[in-house]
Length: 84
Image 1 (tube, helix red, strand yellow):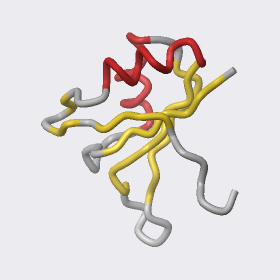
Image 2: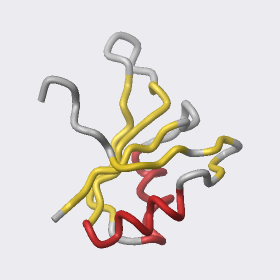
Image 3: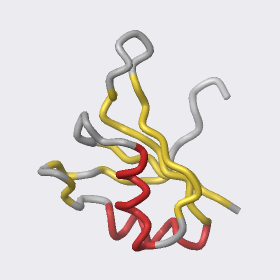
Image 4: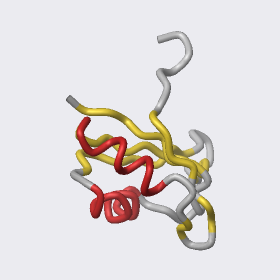
């Protein structure tokens, strides 16, 4: 099984590869994505990391509150989108 983690307060220049590198020491990263504005294509400052179920808690504990490029990250389990 997999779980999706929300990663907030990201620097604008963060790329999906950066998220993979950041979370990989704590377990397997299946995929990562940065959410962008539809009109401008600019990062919205948050993203998602899909990870193995058994690694999720370790990643949340290790990365929530961690500093990345001068910003304190918010990491928790992603909630389903409204209306789904």
